Length: 281
Ligand code: DHB
Ligand code: FE
Image 1: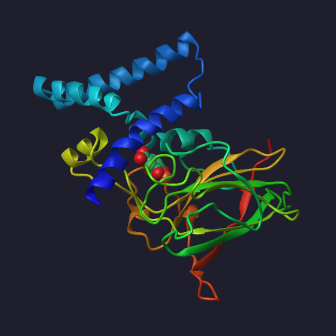
Image 2: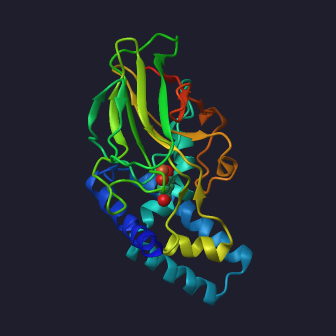
């Protein structure tokens, strides 16, 4: 079991780096003025820390060695998505009136299987965990249903592992793009995900241990919800009662994004309703 978890942790960083390169997100171009401004501020923030905290040569060299290792481990996507992306998301979505956004994280894969609602996400025959029926409506700001809306969903399994980033899972396990019905309703049958621990055996784990932090994110569903003529929202939903909802290493929980599922009448797991509201383009 330990070996399996370690193999998984080591692989997920490298996979996340490879996937980021494939998705070709790094194509933004900025003006010289903007690069000058941002790079100068970041360099100044580091220098201010050195001067104010009187950083020693030992500490400087440990920092240098650690930065080199983050790259070697392929953990830059993990590091940035845990400790920086939440601020970028806050800025990107500050003017939205509809459903709140949250970070995308390192484990999104485009082009997952398209499924018509009501849908069951691809999963193993013996998929472990508590069944979860996740359903609701997708509307515009005025509450009008948006037919043709799509709920793209991806999440970890009952052990906290993501398909395509941990070994041994079917390619599209617990990933899908569910098309809502003509009234903007969607219904998704899946399995309750487990809380997720960011890999502890790489350089991010080393930092967490050295600083005395913890490595946990609360259990979460990742979502990209879209409809013609409306802005796509990237978000996450969490579960009431999860101790890390109030203590997320990635600072990505918002009170509007916490679900409170109830037991299903037929005794088969739990169900929850969540309505998405999309801003116009
Ligand atoms: C990380 C993993 C996640 O599942 C997530 O949602 C955010 C960040 C990470 O390991 O960096
Ligand atoms: Fe995640």
